[in-house]
Length: 333
Ligand SMILES: *[C@@H]1O[C@H](CO)[C@@H](O)[C@H](O)[C@H]1NC(C)=O
Ligand SMILES: *[C@@H]1O[C@H](CO)[C@@H](O)[C@H](O)[C@H]1NC(C)=O
Ligand SMILES: *[C@@H]1O[C@H](CO)[C@@H](O)[C@H](O)[C@H]1NC(C)=O
Ligand SMILES: *[C@@H]1O[C@H](CO)[C@@H](O)[C@H](O)[C@H]1NC(C)=O
Image (cartoon, rainbow, N blue to C red; front, side, top):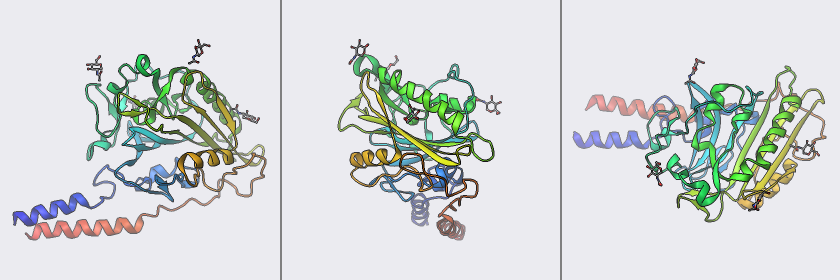
């Protein structure tokens, strides 16, 4: 009987559990809230990483639906080998003041260490973590590597105090050259924020834009021999401008080195450049978003645009069945 029980518990461990049973996600679509952070509910395509909503190497790339103080705040795809995010995706709905939240300590992601809480938590800074960067990795980062903690989703783009705080998870952070972080990248973030606030007003008169910001890992440049120092950082937004009755998008990227500048591009240019970095076809937004110079008149009303249904319904049913069968077998023995 022991052997049967062991076998059954192994089976339970092996079967991908639906949300509610475990906080470990396998795909972004496992958490329905996460769909909302992506334009039209569609996740980006990165060859070998994430294609058509399916993560290609599930042991390495982990989807995180960032959860803080009882609310999902944004989405991150995390690379547990490089210990940096591939991208963070968020919905911009205006900003809750310009300042940084006070006394916010850096946080880590318990769910990367299997079966713990889905809510991010403060990193005491006393450990190095196998599957993610921790505060200790950044101990002497400025003196040794000239890098500090660079946000992908910046707190200055967050709508309220709690969402600002949630951006201080190290899963949303890459080692960024100090003068790039505080220089051209910061200027670009502020300019983009102003554009989003003033132009991304939809037909309900609400500020709304989708933003995805990511990092291109370097070949072998590391912080603390553990955390990849990316070679480049990039960002793109897409929104509907009801005043001009058209979709608009813009992309920016820059090399991650001191005094580096960021350049302003169309989405098509970003896709082509990222495609070269990733050796394949890269897409950041759904086809709703025009990729050329943003002068294309809208053909689709954003508020009636189809939202994709989570494709997991059938799978969930299957796993529920496995678990129910397993449970009743346990009762039998
Ligand atoms: C969590 O949210 C509640 C309700 O919005 C708020 O009152 C509280 O200050 C928040 N707590 C933290 C730690 O941010
Ligand atoms: C980082 O700093 C803390 C406290 O200053 C220290 O305890 C720890 O040993 C340092 N870790 C590394 C990896 O340098
Ligand atoms: C990017 O270039 C466009 C076209 O010249 C301009 O309208 C926009 O303000 C620029 N964006 C930023 C963030 O500089
Ligand atoms: C960056 O710019 C500063 C101020 O202009 C200059 O002192 C410094 O040498 C530059 N650093 C590099 C690596 O170019």
